[in-house]
Length: 245
Length: 54
Image 1 (tube, rainbow over the protein chains, first blue to last red):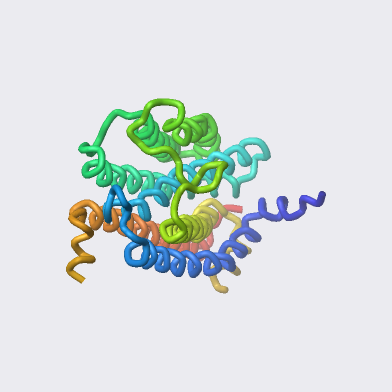
Image 2 (image 1 turned 135 degrees about the vertical axis):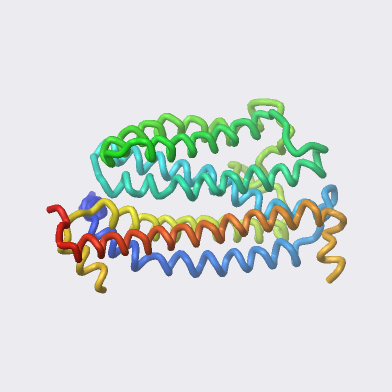
């Protein structure tokens, strides 16, 4: 197999230009999918037979929770690539993931607690799923704090990458917390090996939101990655070209 | 319309959840664009001052 594409991605000017070209290809589908998902979730989907219209929180809660886990996994993979092959662009990508993931973890926690109050009778419970998701937020914050605390970029890259990679054990714990322990939280109805347990009219808008949020993440990551590369790159020749283009 | 806004009595939970999520989306777009604009400005400054390290 030919790995030249991988080597090219390690080159800041190449990745900068590629990120710029690709951004609209993720940003527009994200906007369209999220708008369509909103319409489907708020208007077209019927009320749930047990939770009434309260279940519609799922269309913002599940995508936010998905983002919190998917962004963390992407960050850990990028950090591992950066550690193993010493690729600066990979470290830049990992650093770009953290604020995105942290903010969507907050969204997942807040929307979840707004769902918990009417359905479980409480905003918060020290339950395995809720607690492990809160730990995820602290991992993101710890990662960002560690980076902010180390002035030398290379040292910050290595130290924070180690934290990101070790912290990835929390991802399966969050996902399986509802099956391993007795949790208030319901079991997965979409992210499972068997068929989803939702009616199509409810499921399709949810899939659109999940896909839309994922596409949004890609667009945000590409913009942030360009900022990171510009901040790190000190060779003037290609930056002059890139900025005048 | 009123019925829609009422969300079957769950309005006090559904709408804040949507508001928080879309605020997070909006902030992310704003932060990412601001980070890029900021990085471009400082890169340009470095180029103009002519002391971009090799």
